Image 1: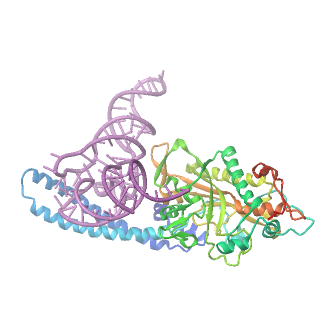
Image 2 (image 1 turned 180 degrees about the vertical axis):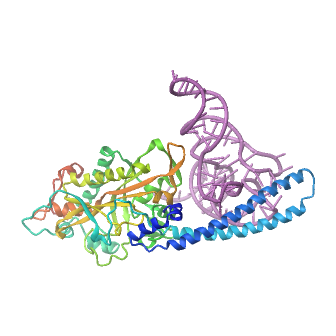
Image 3 (image 1 turned 60 degrees about the vertical axis):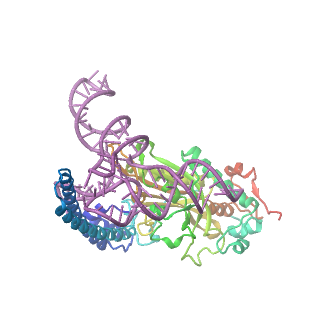
Length: 426
RNA sequence: GGAGGGAUAGCAUAACUGGUAAUGCACCGGUCUUGAAAACCGGCGCCUUCGGGCUUGGGGGUUCGAGUCCCCCUCCCUCCGCCA
């Protein structure tokens, strides 16, 4: 949610920012509704002022045992007028909020301008893609040959785009979750949190998924709870409608959750394997910090996520998303992409965003600043990392000609000492 | 699922038969001071066209006027039932 006052006072600044993201949000309609509502609020306030004054007189008259009937009748009419105005204001407010919630965030000045994802900018690269003296195969093929991944039966149990893991495959997921959580809590100072895996609509609205992208998620009937698409939603909403103490900032959480996404509109993309699935595991990093610190914290958060890949010896690059590719809620975003040998390209494995006040305004998360006034906090988050895609990266980058897969050295303690995955004896 | 109790500002506590939210602590600014504490003054939730208006978990209703009376909902607590 952007600052309405900014829109009111500098509409052109907002307009240019939204043009940079190729947004079609109707700012004029919102501005018109806003000024109409403000006019009505002013009129209602004047009437309330009158009613407050006259009510006080009625009380005095009654105390003096004088007849207040005429005044009471007058005030009845004023009360009806106020009620009518209030109903109009409420309706106007709903229209305003509906439009307001659809307006994306304003990109930060350091975000590269662009027309499409083609204009994203590579910021840095780490590691060298491995050379193979054989043709590397996909993680799906590797996993099935090793007997640790079973997409056919996953489809039987549930449907397309689900994963079923056995033995070392299942252990690998669990090991990565533990490895990532330990790294972020012990070395990067995050507090581990295990949130609910279902959330309500207010939480989805708070972080920006609702109402604009409501079709992208799984909703449980009849309660209408939503399966979390990312831990960002439950964890950011921990402090919804709260005012945080300045001394506690920044607050840093690391959370493991499964993530559930409908992946509507991605038919035909990544149909095989576990790159794009309806349910995957992820360790998410979430920060709440003071506005003046959020860009420094954003860089740090990105480095925290990168370190996972470095310790796992997986080559990657960091991309700064351009204005056209930025998610609606983000002011700035880095994607981290891991090298995927079978596709001979880098694929997204983490997305690290600074939302500035956008989510805080929606979720009403504030902190008490040094001057004593409550201010909107800045929220950030990033995958640290997507576990399923990390499994993909390990299987593919560490594959051997004989079909076995080495386990990165730093992960072995979490793999019960296993150094290499060999075919499972079913 | 059933029965009962509760929700007031960051926290804690008030508000006769309805009369327009009081007080303490914490915090911020100021006065005073070498500095600090104490004391005192102001602020301490939101909006404002700067006149004011709104705010007692949320939403309706009654009333000239609702923290207070009525209805619905949410959450928390206690007990019963069910359950991993």
